Image (cartoon, rainbow, N blue to C red; front, side, top):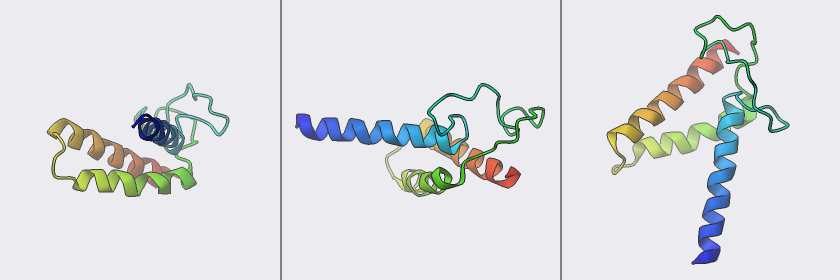
Length: 94
């Protein structure tokens, strides 16, 4: 049980890292980018980094899968929809 819990925690940590990188909020060195993307700043940001393509494609399948789950709360469903919409918006700016 301890080993399985550790594996699950590692997987979740990895997925969280991919989310930050995929959104462009974290660079490839693992450093947080201080300037918001144009999507988050309603177009006022001059930093046009947008999303990072490879992690972006790694995010779509799990988020889409999680949205299809029957037993998620309305709050979780809304958060997943917002994440998916942000990915789509960032991708359009690329």
